[in-house]
Length: 200
Image 1 (cartoon, helix red, strand yellow):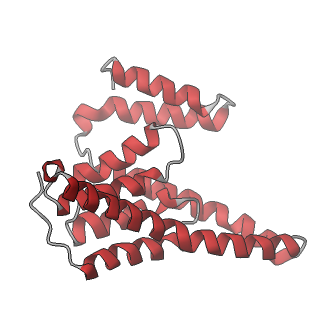
Image 2 (image 1 turned 30 degrees about the vertical axis):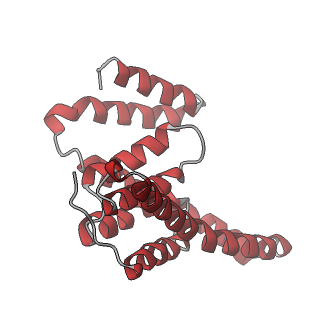
């Protein structure tokens, strides 16, 4: 269990502003900014442990609904750590809720406003060469950001002798997605089944 965090009003505002700045950099979705979230929440401020960070992402990715929920889980865990865990009753619930609110408002508000404004403008100018070139140029950036997130999650295990089945499963899944039209839900279900059986 983490020690009680002494978070000031400035710290809570920093949490909001950091997620707000990442919101404007989240090309390809919020998951692409996970490496910087890790740097800020785990390495720099120590508001989250390594396991809390990776568990937040894993739980949100496996749950139904939008994968942006991992940001809510991170905010929730920051609030719980500030309240010394679940044992604080209503105080723990209040700080966890505050963490969720600030993290989600930070990650959603700026990008939503920017997306709405830019989409309207781009739709009006969709035939211009610059708009088409911009859309084409963003694809490699999104792929690189997703790869950096995958790398961050991979090195958190750091036990290749034990985790080799995960690497094999990842490689096979990547090939299946790339070369076939198998729906992603089947692959997620297969991964869950293999994990449930203890094979990976």
